[in-house]
Image (cartoon, rainbow, N blue to C red; front, side, top):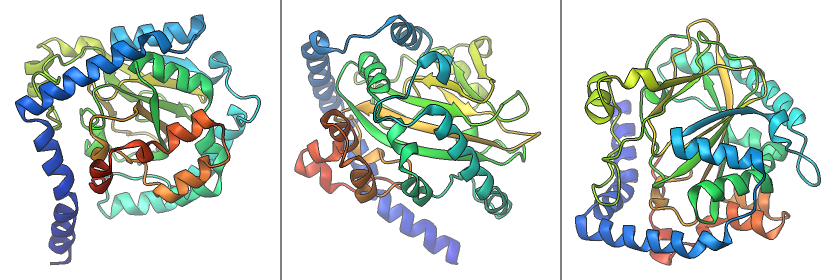
Length: 325
């Protein structure tokens, strides 16, 4: 009975977001939204940030395959107000290890999606601020084509139980037409340790013209949408500690491969257009709005605009509560 009441409460809480998504998927509305978006991208084309060869290579790979694998060393992040990458990786690793017993207990109790408690991010602001470096915002803006919103960071924890559940199933993220997830491995991840995987083949059915559908996909659905040989384009992102994975998780199917040998903990940073197509399907890290605003309040103007993106929404959009995690 308690579980039914909990599910009912969640259904009611998410009703405004589901209703808004349905409205945005009506043919005339979505075509109008698509025209506005295309015009905005055209207007902003001359204002995109200048980038170096490494950043341009990442953007090119994202446009071609939806995924690019590099390392924190190759990115050359840190410096100035930005915390050193090595310190952030070390800190995230420690937090994940402290959380590990609780994560395993939660998984044993049936919880499917597990993250290090967001309050730990709030207590360790370097993890949040690392994702606001100009270099990362430049890459995100160059790929998305518009000024970007920063939706924060989560430390996802996958228990090695071999179950194909929740985000371990093939899916696409809901937030926007295009978006960017930046995953940072805080320990070595091999094929049995639940690597991030993406299918480097775009689903062309998903668009303002055709509408947006976000169901989980099994092999039959993937074959229907992407072609019977889709498995040829599965990219399994194994890597050492400090590996960084850029992926458009809105346009391309992806998952965390079920871990079977050892748990996997990973930093996930999120970016999308400011404003996104579906603001009511954002805020997926569990961070409270007030905490995110406080963490960004002393940062430079560009960083504040990216982190405080909800302030720039029309009043009606701000009234729709974000769907639950």
